[in-house]
Length: 296
Image 1 (cartoon, one colour):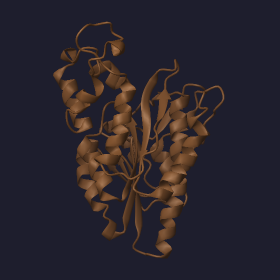
Image 2 (cartoon, rainbow, N blue to C red):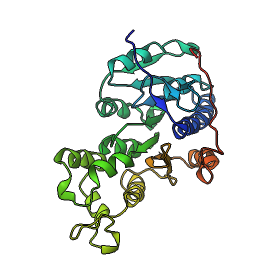
Image 3 (cartoon, rainbow, N blue to C red):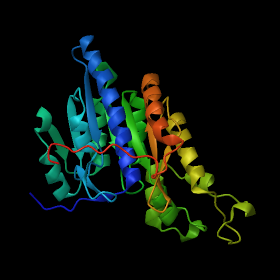
Image 4 (cartoon, rainbow, N blue to C red):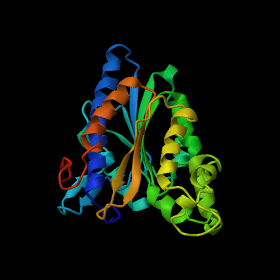
């Protein structure tokens, strides 16, 4: 197996993983309960940017379960596990998780967007299939058509990272003419069209915190709010609670954690889970639960 150096993560990432663990557990209980009524009912776990399966805590130096291993530990189990990872070394580590807790995993060593364009159409309401899909990229990803497909199916719930740091550094500059063509194209794929320009830029001198005349911009959080509306109004998710900002050790916002669902019960559960961290998530007062896995 290829040697892979595990990523080091901060407390906010541990909090995100704790949110996922808590929600996935409740989600799987409810979905598994449907089988008593409909034996053909199946629920899947899909991790679009699965990583290596584990991380190292910056705070303690200990191993921290990544989202794939968290999902494999959820009881009752999901009926299928799909881990998508482009890096060969990390994909090898994920393959090594096959058989843990009696679970069978399917590892897709490919681009997340490519895999999900093939996989999501299989999660049909009429086929009694549902899925929890985790989209945890390092940059502005996934493509909007993937997110919209998930929303319109009415069978998929997603956790999605809106990478606001990537947005601020590479796309949302004071002068849009300075943005690289490749970054504009990335943002267009993420957003679905160029309407983000109308949201993100405005000729208002009070918003010109770059002190440059002419072309001005809004704060990036305006785009975060607009993306939330887009998940509801364009993608068709009925429930999109306010996302939680996730930060680095200096307090800078790295990304916003979104949840989107077609289901009212799911929304209530996730609001309860998010409520643990939404109003008082300061690292010196909130400690995410650290759980060692079968290889820890």
